[in-house]
Image (cartoon, rainbow, N blue to C red; front, side, top):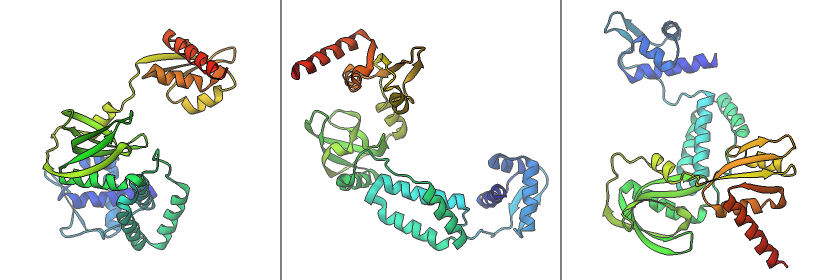
Length: 316
């Protein structure tokens, strides 16, 4: 019955959005048959919703002109989505939207009936979102706020940016979007120093200064598409390792979603995965000591052997 009630509410909202609807179009929107749409119309009439219908090629269903649903009518699932969305924004954005989150949850508390509010509270206690950020971004919240304001205002910014190698550069960029990817914040924009699109990790920005220089975002630019491509994992090497039984459960649990694991009759596990650099792969293999042995590629075997000998000499 709850699903039917949700569809009836959706049906009223659809009827409010356009003057006239054909049964076939309503059926497509709701994902039901035309016969079901006619049945729903009968249920709405029984509830006292003022409807009229016209037959013929230009006919259809419509609400009596001027009829509107009271604002903010939510099911328990819809209200839960709104509360969880507010919590998610707070988890990701921190203080930036704190006042807005407080206001929107207060409004929801004010309009929801007591029984529905209790049902939503129970759902919120059992559906918890936390730990999305890879680090505490509170020290960078002023920078995020400034970047957001400049993105909205379409004005350039000057960054003092520290690279992975701890080298600082001054960059004037046209900030197109802020993106949260893999637990880290990035700003995407056109770098006037490099004359190309770039991504900058927010936690590496030492200082940001708004500039009174306007810019225009290209009409075909998609922040999602660019970030997906720019931050994608390049598999330059295919690594094959043999995993011994003592660490196989741990590796299966931690890395099984992106490693190709094959069980062997002798109880060992063979893992095959892509690596962007041999430096990373060497460190990963060494972190498991004698419990992991490299089978391919030969260059990685040599790197692991050389690193192990260097470690041995250091502790000789």
